[in-house]
Length: 337
Ligand SMILES: NC(=O)C1=CN([C@@H]2O[C@H](COP(=O)(O)OP(=O)(O)OC[C@H]3O[C@@H](n4cnc5c(N)ncnc54)[C@H](O)[C@@H]3O)[C@@H](O)[C@H]2O)C=CC1
Ligand SMILES: O=C1[C@@H](O)[C@H](O)[C@@H](O)[C@H](O)[C@H]1O
Image (cartoon, rainbow, N blue to C red; front, side):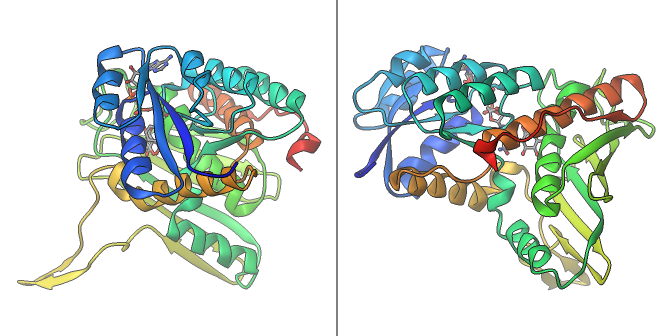
């Protein structure tokens, strides 16, 4: 696909609006040709500020527009399947925000639909794979100098959660990122999940058990733990430390300016993911546009989205039933080998 790509951005909430800004002002090779939201006023407001951009309430109508070449899905997870299948009908490349879909059965339907097409169309928005610190950690592990990875410790802290955030969302919306980075960094599949809960924080809203401690086992024999702590109040932190046979490596602690002043030493903590992962989102969307213009599909695939959904399903059951749950997954299809 040559020339400037016309993108239809579906869902113009927090992430969608940020991706619209990114496509307009930050990256090259694409423009926002359409925005779609069930909230017509919201979509209209965004379209009004962009030359040549049309607002829609129906994703399929936007995809049918003559100037739409690609689709960026940033609606809530339960709306992804319909939007993905509509994009497949028109053979349009898609960048789909995580999660691919909210459960393994719907992710499998999407996986099967893409296989019927016979070629990949989807890049899933697991943006940590584009973060400079995670990329360095991945390169170090692939280099092999640290030896075999034995353990991976993760900390995932959010300042607060939006209203209505549930225990299942803690797994499906938040820990899903650690599921993806575990599979990607270690190049191993997750085979079982256990969820433990300490005493709930006084900051946790009614009905949410926060923080939680999640453990993954992998088919390569590694153990992975995740502190998920989404109402920590002090800011947004994502950290990882891998313990290998010949050494350890850690990211996420000092990616900021460090100052010494008045008897104090330290840096700042990002308030949220939009700031902490700003460069990663930029790199993710630019890579998607570049690959699409070359006629290629790269990055986290529908298979990665399905695998994460299968691990999420085990995680939600492990959480609800208070026991270790094994992950059930199909064999990796040839299209994703
Ligand atoms: N990669 C990352 O770090 C992050 C990814 N996300 C993901 O981005 C997606 C959107 O999340 P947010 O922007 O936080 O949600 P949001 O609630 O701020 O925005 C969602 C928007 O989609 C619209 N919408 C709802 N159903 C729709 C449909 N069927 N068709 C079109 N529009 C529809 C809503 O009216 C709203 O404007 C989710 O999949 C979420 O998991 C969210 C936060 C961070
Ligand atoms: O994807 C995201 C949110 O949906 C989720 O709620 C946060 O916990 C994550 O840190 C963020 O990256």
